[in-house]
Amino acid sequence: MSPVEAFLAEPYVATLTTLRSDGSPHVVAVRFTWDRHAGLARVLTVASSRKAGNLAANPGGRAALCQVDGFRWVTLEGPATVRTDPARVGDAVRRYAERYAVPPPDPPGRIVIEITVDRIMSLNL
Picture 1: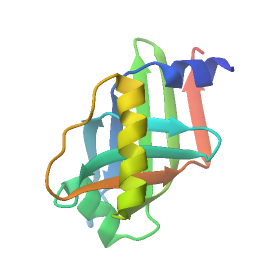
Picture 2 (picture 1 turned 180 degrees about the vertical axis):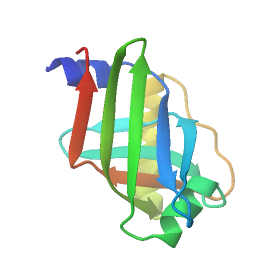
Picture 3 (picture 1 turned 180 degrees about the horizontal axis):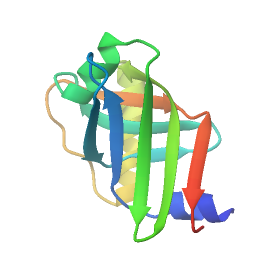
């Protein structure tokens, strides 16, 4: 396992950056999962969230997910899609529970944001 993959396997929180309609960044702390085989980062949220709204308003828009620990960091970047399909949301729930050792919250309107990662940047790994 590469140092980047090992770092991404640690159950840290990350920041997710999406763009508002005026082009300004919207940055929030999130929990996420990384599937290196599929090249997908997944973030559970609700359809009414600003991050989901930003992506729904800009189909194919990009997002950046950055996990930081001190002076070590990894950013996963790529086009992001809001998914409502129950099978995809269920898969994200399962992966979240494995990564964080607790089930995620189960709010009404839960969806998953999938980022198809095409750029990985890191420092001090």
